[in-house]
Amino acid sequence: MTKLLRAGVAGAGVFGGYHANKYLQSEGVELVGVYDRGTGRALELATKIGAKGFDAEHWDAFIDQIDVLTVAAPAVAHAQLAVRALERGVHVYVEKPITPSIQEAEAIIAAARENDRVLACGHQERIVFHEMGLFEAPERPIRLEATRQGPWTGRSVDISVVLDLMVHDIDLALSLNERVATSVIAKSRSVVGDLPDETEAEIRFDDGLVAALKASRAADGRERTMRVVYPSGEVAIDFMARTFLNTTPFKLNADFAETPRGKDPLGASVGDFLAAARGETPRPAVTGEEAARALALALAVDEAAETGLTLSKVAVGA
Figure 1 (tube, helix red, strand yellow):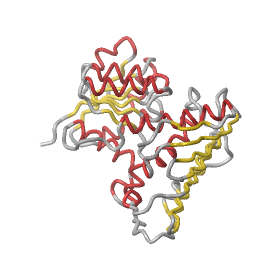
Figure 2 (spheres, rainbow, N blue to C red; figure 1 turned 60 degrees about the horizontal axis):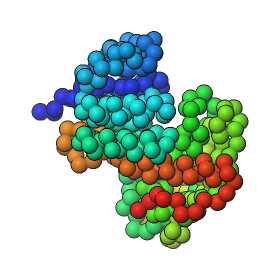
Figure 3 (tube, rainbow, N blue to C red; figure 1 turned 90 degrees about the vertical axis):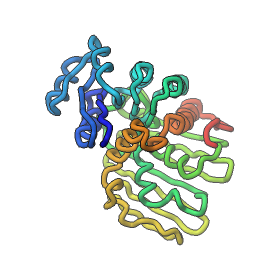
């Protein structure tokens, strides 16, 4: 019999709604409630899904009723919410980026270790790579190019576009090639908000891999593409169309988007988190340590863009 887990969501925005629905659809999970600093937002989402709404004055009542928590609040609140939950014995899934600072990420990781709790992070596009079969490729990539852009939505204005969007592709690059970044050059500009809304970066790794990344949250249209070049060919991925072209000899799964996990990467990521919380699997899809590694490189990109300098020997990777 599946162990019943009582779940909660911190953050009543768009992603909070996504996670609430995944818990509602999960076997052996009871969605207890939604937490948000303001009562109105929490109650609005909770009413839609038939759960309870909790505000800042009722945090203790909220956290004492749950076993697992998704933190989908603004990134600046991730560390406080996650650490407080972990210290109360709750397993935590933090949406990306894990936090806006390395110190806060380390605090979350430490709290998970000290309290023997599962810590997961929402870089769920790793599920896509797994379903494609890219992690079984017999070669290391030599070049990776990615563009991730879309129109202004007004969301995630507390962080740069690098932490908002580019961090996905940084994490994917590290998942394919967990090496040390030896140099980072970047340029950014603000278009609508106060923080960078468009960034281009080139990251070089100690084994020769070059990652050329572009991200914008103020573009005219949406694009989510990646080109991974290997010695024997390349794989060109369209994340929106959920298709790829493959000129390598690797036997990749062209029907990855039709697999149960490929159809719903977020659901698969949440499912892996729940399985780890039950002790059925040794780890979630993406660990806190892996999320912190992506964060460190993302922050290096922001620093390189802000200073106009080339950063060397970035302390991320294996």
